[in-house]
Image (tube, rainbow, N blue to C red; front, side, top):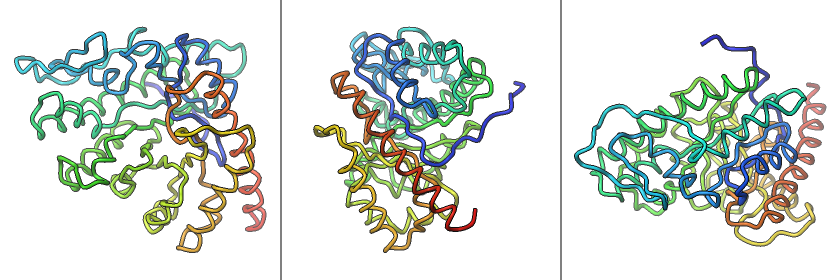
Amino acid sequence: MVRTAHAPALVPALATGIGSLPHDDPRAAADVVLRHHPRLPAAPQLPARTPLEGLVAQWARALPEVSVRDDGTVVIDDRGSFEPPVPSFDSEAHGGLLAFLDVAASTGEEPPARVKVQIAGPLTLGLALHRAGMPVERAFRRGGEAARSWAIAVEELVEERLPGSSLLLFFDEPALVTWRRHEGVLDRETATDVLSGALAAPGCMTGVHVCGAGDRRLALEAGPQVIGVEVGSDLVADADVIARHLDADGWVAWGAVPTDRPVGESVEPLWRALVSVWCELTRRGCDPVRLRTQSLVTPACGLAGHGRSQAERSLRLARAVADRVHDQAVAARLTLGA
């Protein structure tokens, strides 16, 4: 494939989404993310529109031995082929993504310089396949193969539909919660290798979204260029690995807008919470300039369980926090004479 020259994958203080929205109209969802986060819009996933856009259903379907029922349930056929995954995009399972690419390409203005797409991570797929009846070793091998094949397919799709737009590809890993609880069915070293292999598959910039109680250390050991974390006081327990990640030019997507409780209209409490975490991380060894200049801002998790007005408020607040991060990033660079 001949690649078009791209904008830098990331610049400081971009606001973006985690993925899911509550809409049932794909084009309306695309309009929302492009309006609120024009500098790094996130392709929406719309599980309320159809269960086939659920996190596992949407991506496990590439495996020949997997069938997905209308309710999104994954079924394993032990007699099925264990041939390589066959990723295929269609308007039912990928309506949000395809509409987003269409709208972004046909706005009458310049397409976004960069976009974010999120797919299921290999550990989450592996755990789902195991719970559906597949033996552990095979489940995570197949989950890894599926994630890698989708990563390459998404990169090629974005290049085809939005030539010139840089892609940030996130792997969503809610399964990391089980490793944080020491309940992972796969040992940590193997799990890290599975995730690392998926991150290395595409040529674009890659990241991992860690749900609130997920194992951030495992995610960082896999080597993502970006890690998405929920802003909270427990982050300081991982200050050492966050510092190493930043020092290696890694980025952090700060989940600064809570999604597990109501939020008001004011950005002030969200901004104070983020700055408080930054201050404590700085005390524990993180570079204060890197904390600001290698930062994105997002809602903490997806917004499919919210009402539409609530979801839009969360996206709007993420952008408001990002604007403040931008001001501090500029100030930090000026202080250094950059």
